[in-house]
Image 1 (cartoon, helix red, strand yellow):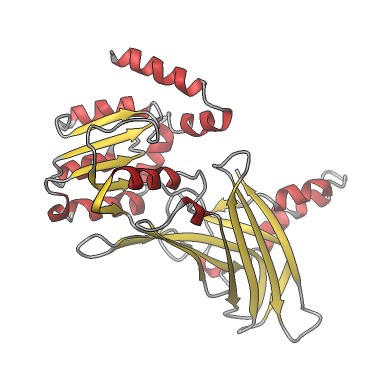
Image 2 (cartoon, helix red, strand yellow):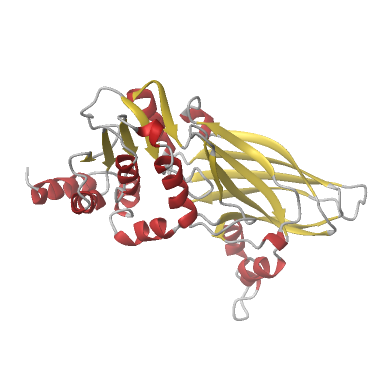
Length: 344
């Protein structure tokens, strides 16, 4: 089958998928999103360091790149001495990836397969290493981790390795009154009209944006840690109670979430964070505005719980519930509430 025929077949198959799946895979057909990811130096250099600086681990190994995109991780693995690399991606960007691999003289080392990981058959029964950049906003948005876990269970050899193999979500409280007023309070007076029915909608949409470290009011706390060797898809729908402790007297208008990633299979662990305390990444942070303004004093606790699950109609979207209660002796400052969010 020629490249043109294969591309036409791929586009036909995409059109036959349900709308949400079409939207997901088509979003990765365009070079712009890949440019953004490649230019994210924290992301890309962390992968490069974990792979290229560990040639003794990759030498003569069969490597699977799940969701290979433009093939950068596959080429890192080939450069590190892998015996062969198989990259798999459903989006049609993979046809450009083949051209990229060819012009870099790596076609004999890298095989790129267009299709869904769950539906294709690899040319190897087992692989020694799985590499993947599967993380979405709030770590789990888009549910690509499901596909990595499928590949692990189906193809990873006993004692095989996963890059990266650990992920942790953190949450903290932030002061963000000006933006909350701009985003949420806007609906109270729209050119003289009361638009408050849209206020609940505005509150229910998490904001993906960068947060200034100066805005962080509480100590961060982990709410989910995933070991990719052991976790299952069931673990991705989770509930976690946690406390946030105020660092100073301030106000809390929202909770902010980010994630850290670890490559512990390396000779020396490689780690990067997407938090407000570190260098910018394209994941930024995820902000959940709450109904109340919490007036906190240093050392006070906000008792919280976070519940996350894939949306029933579209598994790539997330339904998130956050409950909070300010634990204070001052009855005038007591506050508690429940907020529902949809990440889509």
